Amino acid sequence: MTQLYHILDPVGDLVLILSTTSHVADKMSLSDVQARNVEIAGSSPSGSKRKASNSQEIQVRVSSKHLTLASRVFDSMLKPGFSEGDKLRSQGHAALRLPEDNPAALLILLNLMHGRFKAVPRKVDLSMLTELATLVDKYELLEITEMFQGSWMEVLEKSITEEFNDDLLPWICISYVFKKAEIFQRVTRIAQMRSKGPIEEYRLPIPESVLGKQPSYTFDDKRLNNWTVEIDTSRQQTLARMFAYVKLVLDKYQGHERTCETGLKCTAMVLGFLTISLTAIGILPLPDAPYKDFCFETLAQRLREMEILQYCELHPHPYIAKCEGVKKALLPIISRREQELHGLRLDAFQRKEQTARPNQQKNPFGLRLQA
Image 1 (cartoon, rainbow, N blue to C red):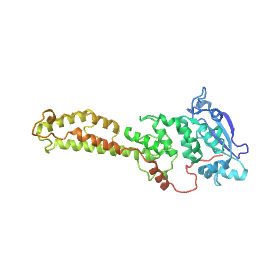
Image 2: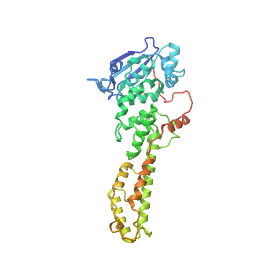
Image 3: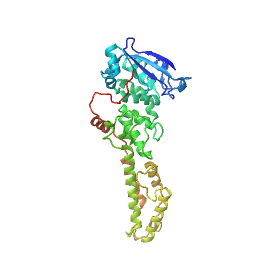
Image 4: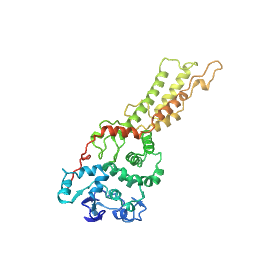
């Protein structure tokens, strides 16, 4: 194992010990972060990819005062009662291991905490911005990143598409952590419309209330208990209403109610086309919750494309009014269901989080502190 050493404060009283072993896919070397001429952090310089066999231990000398002023979490970790806090007060210096943190992302934030703004990249790629958001959430560092958020997101925000792809989850994380309400609502609506079940969170700090399951990392249970399963619940509820309407239409044409003045011929023709079309698009027999593998956007598109012919349309009678077409009645119902999936409001989650989070000075993440 090789070692790297960085000095952010020559008289710093705290050494952070980081490791690259857990970040074999990290694309940016620490020397690239430190270099002032770095244009895009996270891009892949030649030869900068690291392998687990070439793991490095990175020691960063910092000022504990800068960390505790910038972060309530570091303030809790370095208080008396924890080994590092006790050593700082008894010996005047200490070491703190942070093996789970991405070294390149943490170094960017440490430079911000120490006012070393020239060492902070103005542009980052989506992978690095996601790593930064993870650590900003973990250590409660939103305030110190405010002056750089605009430049970090300026180009990346334009790359957001309407596709349900691998970039969507990072953007949910980033917009939630950095409190970008418009982006948050936009990307969560894409998830509502295009997901086919509960979303996997891939170790990102996305609340259970957003995804529908507890993250494997970052948020403690007390912040999750009172939150609802929003994205998948809204998907299921909207699908349930859509299928309920389809069932209502089927029951109407299968029952004894007279549906057309022309008589049974029109009813039979509509029911036949309806049955064949619904079977062809895979929703007959009607599915039950939780509607796994059903995407609302795809369902809506297929319902709109159904062909349903009516006898009274094909053979109009001069004295008998045509019945209301199934498609004519169905289209506004589909539009109303689509409007229900409008994305999630960030301010609502902020209020829930403030209510759920206890106001206690403690180690919020249960981190194991070691010398």
